[in-house]
Length: 508
Image (cartoon, rainbow, N blue to C red; front, side, top):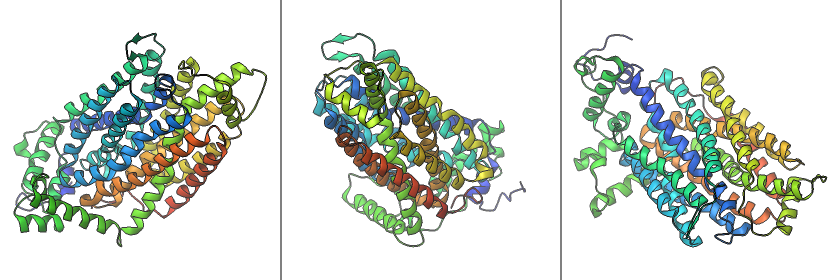
């Protein structure tokens, strides 16, 4: 890198290059990875609670669908709200807040014996966890220089796989236990333990800095420079005084004009003050309009549809896989010599079963294997992303996911269902991580999290609709949602071709 003039105002990209790549970047990847792994556990936790708590809450397929859809409904409401907050108050502020809310509500819900209250608390869990998924990618990406950004973001997929693997291990170790103390059963303990990581990660994240890129964007370059000096000191071992950058080049857009007009940083505005709230709402509206008008309109529509296709299929099938495993397992026990399709077996089991909260060990093993299947793709993504490009991974993974979804209808035994479930999980989770990498690159900093959250909002709307649809049709005609999910994945994969190339330039 060329020597920097200490008297010149330096661009953020050159400044972040001067901090080098080192310990801080690794620590940041680990904490953001922990957030993403925790999100994977939180999103799919109910997949084990549904069969385990079926008798306690007296649930049928429809009430299971409502409970599984509650976090999705919370995410639907929370995605855009937290995205706006992250683009106004800061990335770290939102991450810490949402993690603590998620953890506390999860801990409380573990002691609740009433279905309606439990459902409400899981809705709040979804509302809060919506603030972590997309934002942790933006937070991590804004600390990276261009040459490392896509590779670092690609490794986040591995942490999602870790979360998917840890969840069935924890469930397998706790749910089969014979615990019955008043309203406290084994599944309550499972929910309790599964909620602790959110609190611990939220408290740990307090010690990490705010995104310096965000601080520059909101008119606080001096604070951003102080953070960069500390990163330089940790990465290189040199004194912060030796950092070659003395001042950062400010940005020129609406945030800067607002700061000039009101003589205050947007981060310092108070939500409870009427005047400040008016300014904040005006800023949110201006930014939203910018996303919905050229030249960003095309990118907004593309990413929203792709997220809708991925998340409708992923959130629905991954939540219902353990239930389907459980039903197929029971069918094979009842009719060891018969072979029927998954949908037919599911209906037979429902027609002849009574309330049973026991989950077969094979269900935990199969779900664990589904998580393990993600490891090869989670290593392949960061290793080859720079050579093959994010668009390749998106198109490839979505088309393969579509094929796996179609073949689900034809499976006639548990082994085939397991193979297709592994393929579906590995490909759809790869696609989701890849689209996050794209979102970090193609939208400007002041709109990045808001754009990610808008697309996630649309995707989670699909998750809500998908769970409701699947819960209603699983007992009568589950072929219909399978066809819909396959069509969404196929069209999403085709539309990925129209996304721009990424990884070649600094963040806007």
